Image 1 (cartoon, helix red, strand yellow):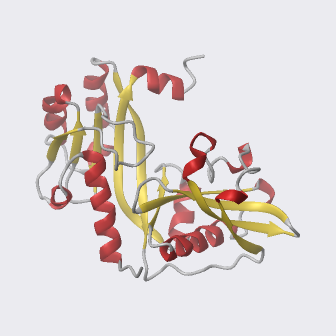
Image 2 (cartoon, one colour; image 1 turned 45 degrees about the horizontal axis):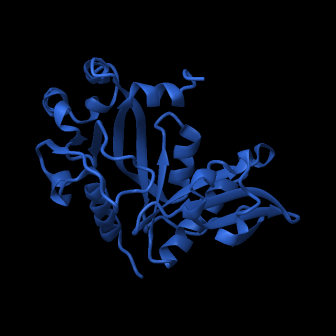
Length: 260
């Protein structure tokens, strides 16, 4: 399947609309939009819907997907500040303080990247690269490859590219089939092999392999993870949308190690 940048963005917005329970046109509106979060079998597999509050922006406005009881609170917040300031401190504290009264906290803040077909190309790193498939991953569910592969969702790990030094795996990029149209890339490189261009070589090659499969590759990074953001950009990806997600106290505490 042949893609254009415009088609890739449309597909991403269509998936975000499924995840958020909104219309694609909502992301292109000049006005902020609040919708009710609902379960959807076609949503990204790792999302546990409905979400208490999830703010999504493709740069035009904010679409807030919320549970009904938080509608008024969130609408007041996103209409109070400019789009970009709703996703950062100090304004973010206003929303978090209000949510905490309901035993909800801000949990995730992430930036999502899509390939720019004008920039995406296969990069070299000086190491042998091999395309890997699901059957090749069985022995690779180890800590050093935990960004590329997810042991809890093995069935979604469908395609990868490995970098080898004299037959030894030193870097791995793999993707999970998170939804019908889009596969998410994760990448790991052994510490002693970093800063050699391996991550970008793996990421760019895997993105091209995913496109050959008729799927859209996407890449997610925390805003503060500069190494990951730089890898995305070097590999031919560009920022496409951002999300800020709130979860119940118990979930946040467990993830932060507060619950033993």
